[in-house]
Length: 107
Image (cartoon, rainbow, N blue to C red; front, top):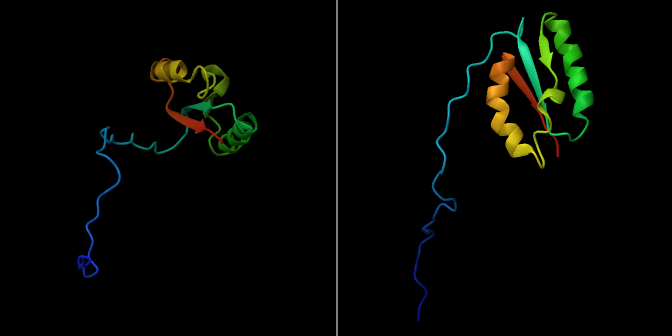
């Protein structure tokens, strides 16, 4: 029995399934952080407490009237309470009048 001749051409199939979620447009970028309230989110891994302190200092030098909502307000965004914390997050951000979010995570 002879092998089929493909002449260098083979049929291929995409290994992934169909997309299950619609793509959403990103929120428009802020023109500036001047006078804005910025929330910090953290997954309690890899020195986020130190990193957020450094970010605050640097951003305050550029935008003296910036306001921060500490990661401590929101709790751990990863772990046992992750689903509950993230479920409540949009409402919490609205209630606090947050304009932007810095989400810190590490592995």
